[in-house]
Image (cartoon, rainbow, N blue to C red; front, side):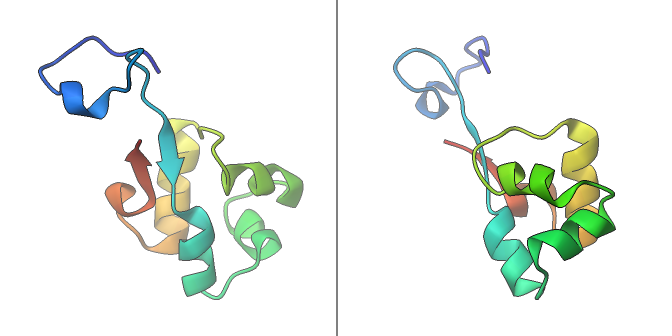
Length: 81
């Protein structure tokens, strides 16, 4: 994601890119859910969720549904690196 400088230069890397990262794998494990179980809760194919545990960026709707399913705040699951 390329964002204009808003005075928060410390969150940008050298080329101004922000990477949205997540803690889905840890939150899923804490909830005692498998990838297939969480996928079922958020109406995704299990193989699609495998990619969400990694660096793939979810849509805003999917991110919100994941937060609800895992009973977490957005900032508890997602962060910029």
